[in-house]
Length: 100
Image (cartoon, rainbow, N blue to C red; front, side, top):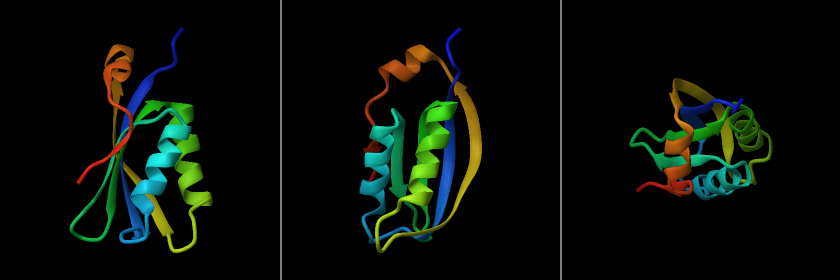
């Protein structure tokens, strides 16, 4: 049986704008087979939409929190919404990208 694919909306708080955080997140997403996007929000937070297998999403989020480069300070990663995604939809999605 195929592992379920999920779409999770996450808000990152802390020093996450103007420090290369979106590019860092994109790299970690690609390493962990995550699709979706990352974008800055007007209030200084960053929105991440991660789509993938649950274990891949957990590894992705852990890698962002633990191995952030100098200058980035992730105070919190808060999942706000989670939905299921079909495997077909996941395969048709673009690679993880930075949304402007």
